Length: 533
Image 1 (cartoon, helix red, strand yellow):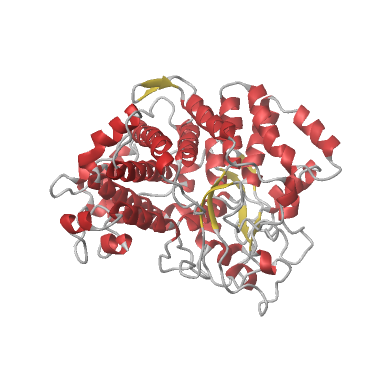
Image 2 (cartoon, one colour):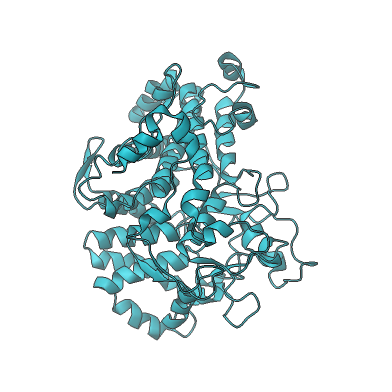
């Protein structure tokens, strides 16, 4: 309800801090019961909102953009055209408007929510600091949802850096001043007649991310004792905020000590510490080998899922959904001609390992729908059916935004980057122990015993690409670790091409959209050209 009221006339103008049209006045908003909860649920609905085209359906469509552009997800054919431009390598131009407005819409809405609790911020923080006297019901509610809003804002800024900025290894010695994206908080949007803002430096945006998420973790750790997510996993909790921060710091990629809002520690230290806290907390177990091909990655009740959407009849986006685009067992584009598959060379790497049970996620190369993820992403009720007259037509498979396996990959890479190979192998082994095919333990033990130096780095990259295939981490992995890849033969338009994402990074990130350069006086085309010299 609140999303509709707030966004009714925003359109693409994410800077509109007081949208016109059917908007609640402040005094009307204050009188609504659970108004803050209504606001936060409206923000969450952006994660799965249908955008009018069948390749625009929230976070899972953005995940697909990145994995297709990186080449890890191959489009084998295209009868309908959705996502085809990304298969052809035109990500930087075609996705720029949607991703920009998507993340800035979320930032704008979190800023509006932060304004709603502004008068109680001191009480919210002091109650969490004191912990001796139980806060009022109002402070409990506001502290709980304000913590979630901060986490969402930090997450959105991290997403913008991933898609609109150079990878950090290209910014050595200049990252303190390299222009990134504009930063808006509740402070900025209170400025009368705000017409936009300058691009903040990469370092300043990371500082914003660090501050928002560190404060979010602090608030959610305290105020979650008064509330429960229940069976829903849509609301962010402290562990989710920890991994958002950990992944952002991994992408920051700096082993030198740096002051993040008063705390002196390296980005890799932060990433490892936050991931370790999630792992040591023990709330979410790794998906066991016994369930590797049974859940379809389609069920919110999966114990390893941390952050997810329970898709219902009321919220399904039908064909315009991740499963509508990827699942060959649903009445979908994947089944009807726009087939998505794992890159055939990456699949060959899995087979060559000999021990990796994740090979079973994908059809073999000589099968119908070769290389398709028929045993990773599928509707369990029709998992053996590809007849279009009999496949699933309900599109109720759930959306995963974060699962605990992410923590182990972050910890392994952060420890490796810090030069601690033993700890890196320890975390990688905990994950891979649950990925060993029956009878292949000897081959696995040989492989795990060889991991050091370049072999360890390659093992980390391999596991990011395989474990998280289809979940939006492929492009950033290859950018962050400067991995050159040669694509397989099963691509519609880039078959057998070599991609050097680490050096040709300008082709693997989005341009700032013309709507921004045209209407934000601080980021005109002339200024943008000067910034990038």
